[in-house]
Amino acid sequence: MSDHGAAAGPPPAAGPPRGAPQRLRGGVLGMADIAAATMANVGPAMSFFFGFAFLATTAGVASPLTIAAAGVAVALLGNTLAQFSRAHPSAGSFITFVGKTFGPVSAVTTALLAGLGYIIGMAAVIAVSGGFVQITLHHYTGVDLPWIVWTLLLTGGAVLLMVRGVVVSTKWAGYFFGVEMLVLVAVSVAALAEHGGRLSAAPFLPTHLTHGVTGLAAGFPLAVYLFIGWENSAALAEETENPRRNVGRAVFFSVAIMTVSYILFAYATVTAFDYDVERLGAARIPFVDVAHGTLGALAFLAYLGGLTSTLGVLIAGINSQARLMFNAGREGLLPAFLGYVHPTRRTPDNAIVTFAGTSLLIIGVWGLGHLVGAADGPMNPVVFFTESSSLGSLLILLVYLASNIALPLYYRRYRPQEFRTVRHLVLPAIGALAILVPLYYLAKPGQPAPYNWFPVVALAALLGSVAYAALLVRRDPGLAERVGSVVADME
Image 1 (tube, helix red, strand yellow):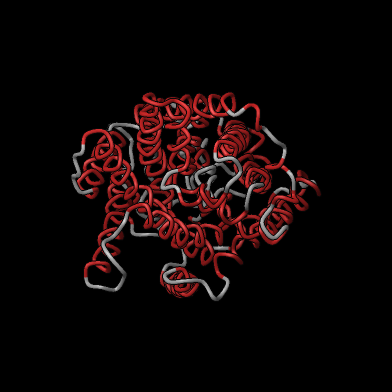
Image 2: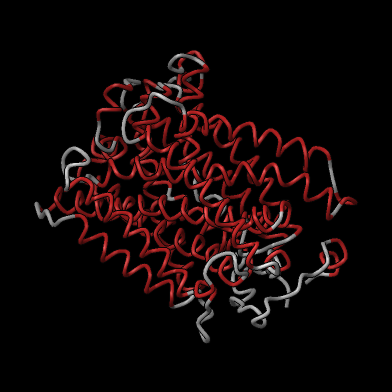
């Protein structure tokens, strides 16, 4: 650990009684690696393909303006993550940051909420990966093999790649991201060129938001969801070279690139649909329709971009989010078997397999509900993507909110000489307020089923997590010392 970190941080905590914790392979990733993995986790093609129609019908023609507002909000969250990572880089990310600030009960609660939220969110990705393969093959070959078959094959392949090592899996996630971005930008530029005579500033004018500020607020949670995965780099801190510097850089670089890119894709899509959001919302995958109308036979490139995007999210998402579970396992916040590291590859195999397996289990339970008649018709992976991602986002937003509240308290307590009013108080306060908007719209009463049940599920998860955390801390008093005990750049 650097001299600066050793002098300014809190006193080192004692390790677990069972011996020194297992470590991941340190310093094998650079800033470019974790930035690419972060953007692959965001999965711009997958997120935009399946999320933009709903956003456009909610926010209206000025949906690109909503995306810009969401990008600013996510950048505020990025400041919180960057400041925490600069002071206490950890594979535990938000779990460690909240736990170091508020104590072991909050750490266990955050571990459970974050783990459940990310698993539910990843279930959406896993399901739609198979769904998109099914859509693509049926479109071009007429073959209609059930999507669940492709989901199982892709998930199994992604897990095998991840257990081979973080370097190879991160590189592949980066390659997949490069392909999807090339396709997205090419289609967007071609669409704007073809519709050059109808270009307008309308998508950036507040007057073209549906119901004005209310439309902006209603579309805001959908726009924020497009960025989910922006926090990927923090969980890779232990394997990153100079994580105190590089994690923050990767966060801001990724958020900036994604914001500009999404605005381009949104503007091109709205323009190609002649600013008709009703027709846009009725399209199954609007951007693919744009590709067909612009590139003709070369529209298969859009399908290719969607396929590589889902693969990139599978690898990058499970890679980073399983590391949160791994760190919680080795510190005793979650079952200890999750803290296992392969002796030669230094990969958290148990956490990776458990994370992916639990996501598949959620898909199975959801599908069973359709089979027994609890929901109408057979399970549709695209519909499930919206439902599952909404529930997962609700839990993850609670973790974001807690982290923004924690930042000023952490710096005041542990690093008062470095405390800066704007960076450590004003920005996280604005970030916390920004998070309350999507939280409200995801939890407000009067929503159709199953969305009306999600606030109840989230509240039950929160209360259950707090109760379990209080019981665990009472049974294991040493837990307080182990929270955040493993610093990423500590030898």
